[in-house]
Every structure is written in C-alpha cells, then in structure tokens.
Amino acid sequence: MISDTPFLVGDKPTLADAVFIGVARWLDFHAIAHKSRWPKMAALRERLEADPAVTYATALESGDNPTRTGSCVGHVPLAEVIGQFGQ
Image (cartoon, rainbow, N blue to C red; front, side, top):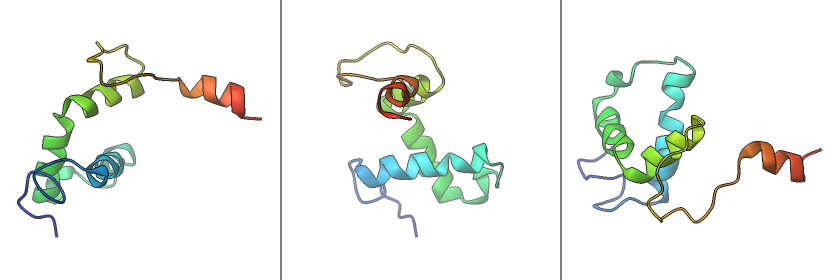
C-alpha cells in the first residue's frame, strides 16, 4: 500500500512519516523480520532515516549529544520527566 512518492502521503514529510519511522524501527528492536522483507517500506524507511530530524532524534535516543541545527528548541531527558511528573 506504500506508494512511490517520497513520503507516505506525498512529496513532503507529515506526521504520518514521523509515526511510521518510529513504528518501523520496532522490526529491528523486537527482531520481528528483516526490513528487506517489504522493499517499499524499506526504501521509505531508508529515506526517512537519512532525514536530519530523524538522525538527530535517533542520536538523542541513543544517549548521544548531537550537533544542534537550531530546529529543536529544547530536549528534556526522559529520566527528568519521570522524576518531575512520575511517581
């Protein structure tokens, strides 16, 4: 069902692409299947993973301190959120 457009619903990324890349990565995390099993999904995922915003978010998720581009106006580590608002 994935079309041949650069993104899920056209030529520009949308919220659908942000959700997709997060969920698509579960294939690896949960060792469900190799991404090559679905070629169109793999191609879309590859394009999204090359996007600077996804690269930045993935680096933050990994605990790295990536170079800022000015697009992200703030990041709060999950442990800080849990400490402030959790139990």
